[in-house]
Length: 175
Image 1 (cartoon, one colour):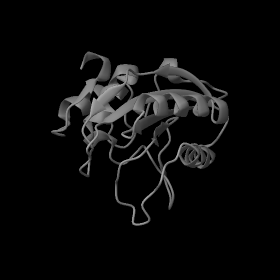
Image 2: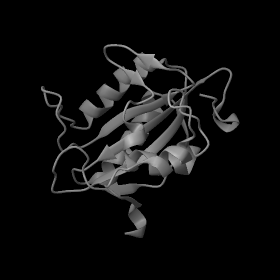
Image 3: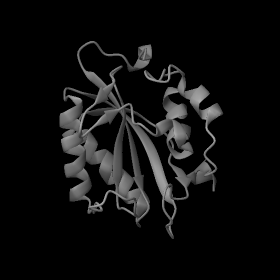
Image 4: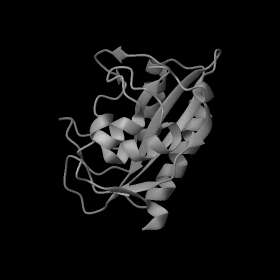
């Protein structure tokens, strides 16, 4: 992936995260997650609008609100993941032991970390399903349309054009 000039910092790492919530108060959980990210992980330098969509991969009574958050950080990807899990836990996130999807107060995913490809037992970057999900691609396109996916070798805007996800994602304030 060629990191966009506006995202590149020779000293700090750049991470692009996706936050999401479908348990009320959804906006409050997104705000609290962003505040915790700024405090525990790094400086937020860009955020997308908040998008609303149906749940992906399971049935839920309440739709999700999602937002992309771009940060500069001195942490490595593994340490970011540790901090994300702590933030989620502090905000009441309960993970299913079997790994299935369910409603949640907050979910934070690492979409990209610098221009790196990381695959290990606890982490896969870029996020392995980001190109399949409108609720990820729409806010990502808003803040980094030209960012090239390092595995798929396509810009985010092209991934959005090619995405066949039937679940619509719309800016929440326009609904």
